[in-house]
Amino acid sequence: MRIKYFEATDTTIMELSNNPTLATQELNENLYIDLDGQGIVVSITIEHADRSANMQELLYQRIPAGLAASTPSAFGTSPKSTADVQM
Image 1 (cartoon, helix red, strand yellow):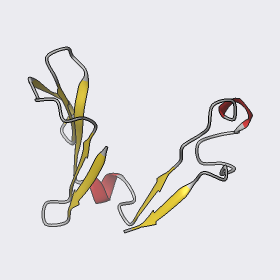
Image 2 (cartoon, rainbow, N blue to C red):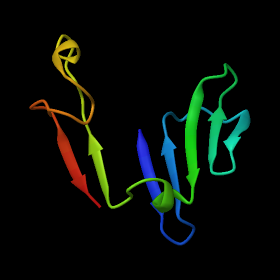
Image 3 (cartoon, one colour):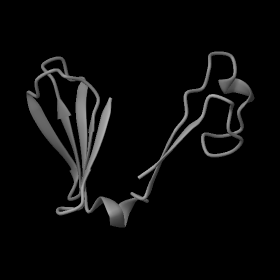
Image 4 (cartoon, helix red, strand yellow):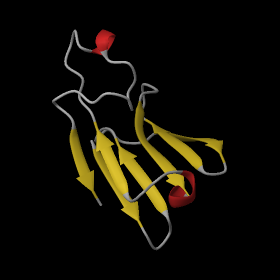
């Protein structure tokens, strides 16, 4: 997965796979999803991203199997496998 933020247009693109895009669905005026031939999400585009989300910081958490049930929330207590990336 790749996440790109374009400051000039305030656009974030989350690329989930390398599959070719067959269709794009507009969820609202700022959120689009690209789908492959099987209807699987290929990418997500967020327009006006800095207004919609905190684009200064990206938090990625990989929750090991078996630990997910004991973790209160995705933004609560962080497991040891958390990686913080400052942008």
